[in-house]
Image (cartoon, rainbow, N blue to C red; front, top):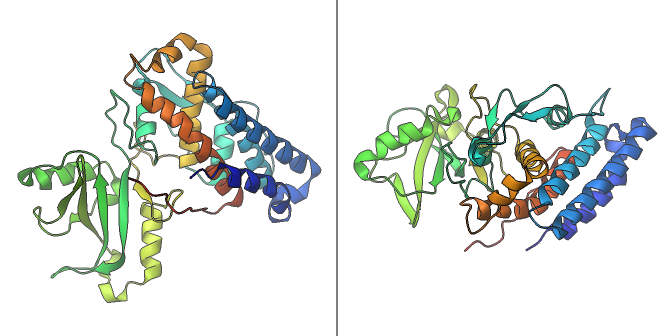
Length: 344
């Protein structure tokens, strides 16, 4: 199922429907820039559909920058325009997962991150860490990457109390690797959860023999519980409190019920930027490599020689539908959740 035609209509509709709801009503300059920028975003996305992966990141990144200008025109008080990227790739020679990007002044990335309420990039971050943290790409690991990945989380709609102690929020975590042997499961859980600070107090729900179950080859599920604050008993925990807890821990991403635990980014272990701004960082890096190191980019895309060629090309295809969706959410300042198509 391709949502692109509906999203294109929605983006066009926002050119008038958002005027009275946003800062666009303040000036004709904002409105004209908003309209022109969204038009350019749409045309860059359409151009990206036509070209191959050799050129696609350039269209995607510059289209996203124009969408960012529309977002800041609609939502940023005072100075809302920008004239530089606000980012810098330090060295394009390493293997793809080890290429790093860092903030550079106050530019497009910072303006749009502030306008959308995203975490900023606090320090240097590796491409591999950004990729691994991103819902939708974490399932397709880069060869040579070692960073912790975002984990799917399925929440329960109730809190539950163990035989002794406070109530716990209940959930299952999905892990795409071989299930550890029973003797190693407790230590595996402690080591794995250390990468997700919000899970510091999480515990296996049940013993190591019952908390783990295999879902399919190379994928298993883990039952976990996270203590309810202040030792509140299970019967006093409302559905609204449960929803708010999981919305903060692992917000829904694009599809109803699809949540991810995302690991911190960079040496400072700061929370990752939002999915929109993480895509921004990845596409900025891709665009820099493809423009200034075309030979290296061609090598990355070589399906017969590069171990990352297939996943990189797949990511650029995914972006064609993901970016309009995330841009619409940023313009509306609220989630737009679809029903997940059937996955085999």
